[in-house]
Length: 205
Image (cartoon, rainbow, N blue to C red):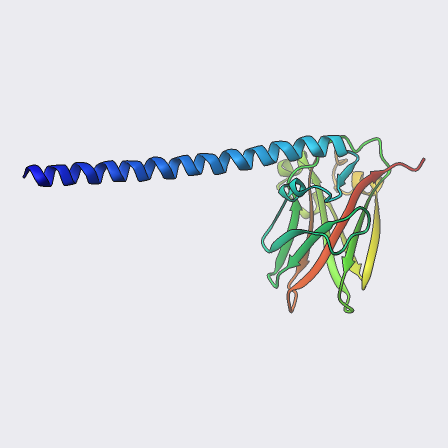
């Protein structure tokens, strides 16, 4: 009985040690992710009105996707890197900027560049909305929506912020509280790759 008691006690100690180790690892991972997010939010605030240039490894934390994304040093419009995006064959395959710091109201347009490595065109949808969008049931008519057709090579697009401001059907979009920018493909017959670079706000002067 005494031996069994010692075995049970040792097993409990081992189980407790494993639990403590797992908790410690989870805390470290969570703290590290939190540190990365804070670091990139600081970088994003310093970069503004550049919203993304992908010149730092932290910038990938601004984006989420159901496919795969990575910082690429093989293709770029400016600098030395871009965001490589793997669009899937799902009905909607998005890549979304998680946060957008700064006030857009004093700028005239949003500029961005996509690289299509394939000879076949690639159609990409763009969606932008502000913090008020949720109060309007996330309605399609309450946000900015536009299609882009990517030809082979670099494609640069400029979105008028007046178009953005007037996109909701029943109100004006709040350009100083932009919440989300998304790019997505729809029901592709096969997975496709594209590269995104140089997302920035521009003034006419």
